[in-house]
Image 1: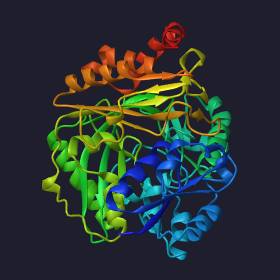
Image 2 (image 1 turned 90 degrees about the vertical axis):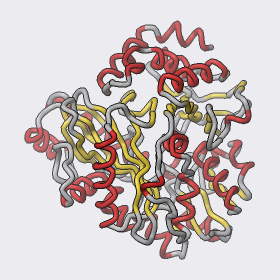
Image 3 (image 1 turned 45 degrees about the horizontal axis):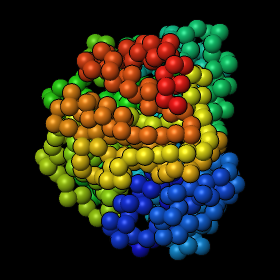
Length: 466
């Protein structure tokens, strides 16, 4: 096992990695930007080192600064978290050149699967059908228009280098494409340091299903079931749950085995998520692979009892997976809601500012088992910065049944008190109470309609929350 690792990320995921390292006896060095100098998670690390000014391009995306920080502090490995450089093949290769272990897939696997456009081609070569789309990247608005003509509208422009809803735009007509292309390119460049885009058909009424996988260096790849992530706003996941009511036990077994075989063939090591789109006809299409830890990994941890971050560290250190596919069992149901500092009355505009109160039972924080879990670095007195994602953390409930999990999450949201900035707590209460969500048989379109219903009452809801 490593003696010391650099955490090349921030906020709640940085603290999640710190907790896992501590349990394994691994020292941690938290890289931070000047804008995060007062972040509460820094006090939890063994060391902290500033890697640059606030803008991510000069800090969390600054490969030279991160590699220098790892060398200065005597680290043997780098954990990239999610976002930023977590799927950057060049950064993984540069880590290897510096005799640092990149806690994630190899540069080769990242090029094959971390790059979204390349992943589509890779999966297609193994016979896994994808959503119809462009062949490779579209390098200009003109190329995008030509590709869309063949695919058919509506289409979705997507960043090839990342996820999290960034660098994505839906276009319903040719006149929408030029502006959307430039907006998506700039957003992707800012978020991931790569403005590459590809295009695919936008499937109306689809469901977002994803499979969690783990692989080691010795050719073993297993899956830990699926998650349902169809509750989204502007292509950003809002609520996630496991397992999905849109996947049968037979589909889980068959598709899970196929996914694991493909990843075994390419030598995939570490945690990853294969994202699929379930069409209205029930067919499942490959969309992309996130070659990293997902924001929503806690729901899988709670229903399987598997510590995904611990296993990331262990397989990266060369330990074999002792878990076999037959050891994986899904127990109960887990639901996660993302807590964001956003003003619902202003179109969910990010709302940075001072957190004057953040009250929740301490035993909720980062627990790997239990009815309620809270993953957050936030404390009262924390100032939400303007430069980064507005997520404050995730609240997760686990119960024997889905209905019980919904009720446990509703009760936890009622108990959680956040003051000083507007949040999405009222939105989550609304979503959990909606008939569409409670049915368990909902599409992204269904939940978009529920979002619109909420927006109609957003001002009074937000005022009540304050």
